[in-house]
Image 1 (cartoon, helix red, strand yellow):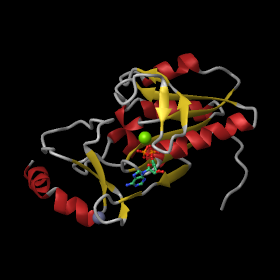
Image 2: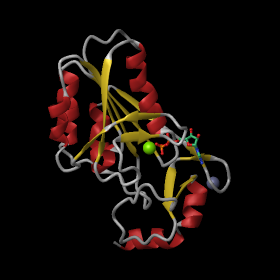
Image 3: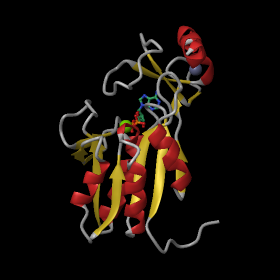
Length: 198
Ligand code: ADP
Ligand code: MG
Ligand code: ZN
């Protein structure tokens, strides 16, 4: 059931690499611009893919984004003025857990908050920031990519030449593939062993 929204809200858009998270995020916030409403976008400063202040989707759609120190998501408030109707935050998995509070406060201020992030890292480990964001989000959009190896629905990401001890996601490289469950298992036989033995 959907009724009119009398306050700000949070929508989390999440899924594997290549699933169109950034595309969805940018489309959502740009809609405010078409309506003549003000919006602003942010991304963490450890997104190495683009040094510039921009969110880029592989679809080609893009939007300016202010880079925020990933350890201090509170800095977002420095850029929030009264006339802002919507906020977009990309690559949210890289932000410190205090992003949850920030996002909640923004929605309480009456702002529509759109957050995009990865469901799992290449070893199928969840990201705490995304996990804790989900239950406080009024709306959740789960995305799928197309499996690089077989063309099925892909809900997982594989990192080529990875080892279980790697704990960070290196974004912006071509070292990742979106995989379905079967192809992920095939690709990550050694990784599965490693993760289980931890
Ligand atoms: P994300 O932010 O989730 O990584 P993007 O918005 O940057 O995703 O890119 C999604 C777009 O990438 C798709 O709309 C499609 O045009 C393109 N694309 C390329 N390879 C794939 C794939 N294997 N599965 C899905 N989309 C893909
Ligand atoms: Mg993206
Ligand atoms: Zn597959």
